[in-house]
Length: 71
Image: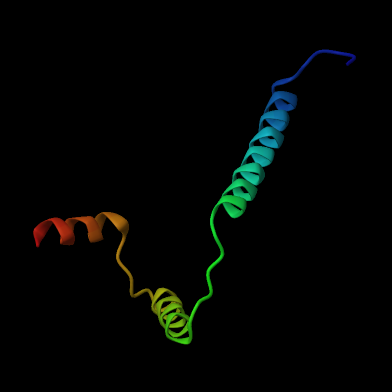
């Protein structure tokens, strides 16, 4: 390597390492978790959930936790 190492060079390398680690983690999870078939009912529920999210009809994780604690 010739010349001085700049902060930008360090940031770029850290970003590359982070991307590689994220990819490795994703591949690891995919290889560890078993595949499972999704039934028609589950596909329908997923579609409904996605539509609700698009409409803004959702709660945050924190809101859900509060509701569960209140019960």
